[in-house]
Each structure stands twice: as C-alpha cells, then as structure tokens.
Length: 456
Image (cartoon, rainbow, N blue to C red):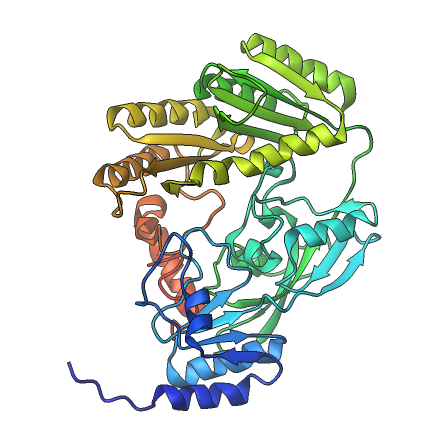
C-alpha cells in the first residue's frame, strides 16, 4: 500500500534536536541497535528506533514528548535496560527515552525516614548511601546492583526481602511524573500516611511507562535492625516439601527477611543428594526466633541444616542465590517465568510444575521467593535448537492456566511487557480489562507512551 507521509524522518529528528537541549540525541546505527533490542529476547531489526534520547532533565523529557505528540510517534521509556519481558525495546521509528543519566540522590532524610531520588539512581547505590546514615532501602530485586529506581517503580519490582518488607509499591510514598501531554505532576509526598484524593501514586507504580515518565521518586527508608542477623540453609527431598516448610515458617511469627527456594544447585558444596535448597534469614529476633525455625525444619524433615551469624558466610549465601540463575542460563536456551500464588497454593503449584516437567519431557529448574509465593520456573533447551520448541510453549501455557486456577498471577514482579500482554483478559476478566484500556486512554489518548506494553 502506498503511504504519503506528511513529514520525513529527518524533519522529525531536526525538530527533536531543538527540543532536547540539556541531554543528547543519538541516531547512529550502533547506538540504536544497542538500545532497541533486549539480549536473548529480540535479535532482528524490525523494531529499530528512530532516535535514542539521553535525557538529563525534565525539560528533555517534555521536549521528547512534545515531538512525539506533534508527529504521532511512539516513545519507549528506558532506565537501566534490565527488563526481562520486552518492556523497553524499541519499536520501528520510535523514540527511545532514557532516564539513566538522571541519577542524582537528591536527599536522604534520616529524620523523615525517606530518600528523594531521580529515576536513574541504581537501587544498590541508594541502599549503600542510606546505610552510611544507619538506614537502608528494603526492596532488593535480583537486579539490585544494576537496576534503576525508576525501572523498579515502573515494574513494581520485588526481591528476596519482599516476604518481610514488601515490594516496591510498599516502599514508595510519592513520585513526580511527566504525563503524555507534557505536564509534570506531583503525586503523593513525604508523609507516611495520606488519605486525600485518589491514590494516583500507586496507579503509576507498575504502569510500565504507559501512563507517564517518572522524573523523581520519594521512597521510604528503614533503620538498620538491631541485633545479629542469622542466616542458614536447609535441604529437602523435593520442592513440595520445601514449600510446606516455608508456609510453616511464614506463619510462625518469626518474621523472616528471606525465604528463598532453589532446585538442587550442583555447584554448591552445602549438600550432595538433596533436591531442594532453602536459604533463610532473620535480621532480628535472636535465639528465640531461631529456635522456632529449627523446630519447624526438624518437623518438616529438613536435612543438612546449617546456620551462621558470620557476615562473610551470609554474604556468600546471598551471592549463591544471586548467581544461581545465571549459572542455569549459561550455555543453553532458557525462558524464566514469574508466577505468584497464595501461600497455601505454593506446594500444589510446585507439584504441578514437576508433573509437567515429567509428562512433557521439559527440563524445568524452579527457584524463587518462596516466602511470598513467587516462583521462577526456568525452562531450558539446547542452544542447537534455534526456535522455541512447541512443548516449551505448551508448558508455559499450562503453568499460566494452573496459576490462575489457584488464584494467582502470572507476573509477580517482572511486569508484563510484550511477553504476556495477551493474557490480560484471562487474568483480569473482561470488565477489568476494559477499565485498564480506559485508564490508558485517559492518560495517553494518542497512545504514544510505550504502546503494546502492559495491556494489548
């Protein structure tokens, strides 16, 4: 079909250059390919962006959106490019808008127990700075050393300590956001309580850049707990037995900071024959709490239980958990999923995943944040097979359906992106699916903000 365009790409770029005055606009092929495609997820040029905008100020963001409105061009927000669901890949002739260079820690207030940061501040860097003042930032996704706060907010990132301290949504008090029409609005604030107006702050958290561009975040900080943290490992015959132990610990009153599940990880020296490994941590509570945990582990027939208060040994255990998935990924194709179920349904889901693995002959390595019911089954197949095998797709579909049947969600913390946007109706139902689209249309009537992500 012949299309008579009103404006050339060069005219768009010339205008964009007049609107981005503090940051930089890149149009070279190397930069566009680098930021248009997720490693392992996309590998062709079908979504090559027209320009990559490195925003340094809110004014740059507003100028980019002004350009997008004028020429009806999609804007793809990016932060530190750690999405695992094709949530920030370029679309053909789109504008990628990066806030990675907006990375100032504006304020850390110990008195108010908050920090005010720009979106490009790396999660781990904020935590380190807070700890210098006797405070810490609780959310700790696996990408903690590399992911930005803006991206964490946009995806409602979770992590290992969610079982005690909650996900990102539980630790954000306010945001500043540039809307599609160019207005910068302040939502929420510095107070720990607020009951005025509709809670638009929470609406923005997890919106994946489809409703606005985050320019500033106010997060809660917590005092570093008193006492000596206790950490340990225990092993079980299978993941189902581990899940039952996790449930017992979770409701015992000891308030664990971490309850992490791993399938047998052969590179560890902790145990040789057990099929499932539990890493647990208490950051306070002392010997009484640890006695309760030991009793539960004994009742649930855990073996090779090891407990330590040594900081170096604890750090090694935490690193073991972080290293586990990269070790699984190495040398083979993989898809890691992100379902979450009510705690009472964790063991049934584990059973079902194991049954699927055997019935369809698919290797599935299951790990996750067992304390909050969030599991990460990783499906692997040989690199010699370039296309995703049909049985892999079937397993994914069956796992999603089972998760929903158990009252769960098919995305606990990794967001939706483009990988799961076909499941909105299945998870949310027709009425809520329609509301989602109505909210999107209200905030972004021209559909320029991260189209095809979050909702289809």
